[in-house]
Image (cartoon, rainbow, N blue to C red; front, side, top):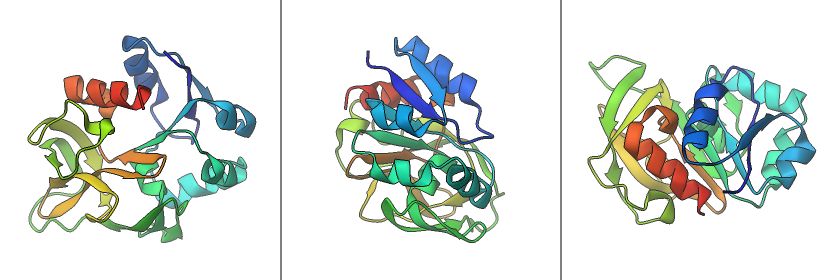
Length: 196
């Protein structure tokens, strides 16, 4: 399969993502070099931690503009997905502006935040990224912020209210859950991304 570049955005658990890709027969290298990222056939943007810190790291490494110029498929994972949006409540700060909308803190009523554990997807729109993945399939979440359901939403999830679980806008896609920790469904999503 094609080689991928995983953007080293700092603070992410990159090894588990690399292992998940290796199990699919894909080689992936971790890089913070803008030239390597721009030349890659596919790009992954993982992330954990605080949005403002992650955006600062991308800017400090000169990757903010590089990511915005990409034309190949990019998949943001967890915080990496949130960074694709225009506005980020956490900070607050501006995101990359690649998916219109604002990421907000979860307000699930009596449910605990962060939303942590297995939850089901609700498929809203057919898309090659979701091939073989159905409504009520379980995936693994760990997050306190999420994007509301909007025009870019492919699948949602309910946690005291609906939020975007999978989004796509042009060549930029994102998943709020962790595919590398989501067993069969996560592996299928990563395989689908490799085949885009």
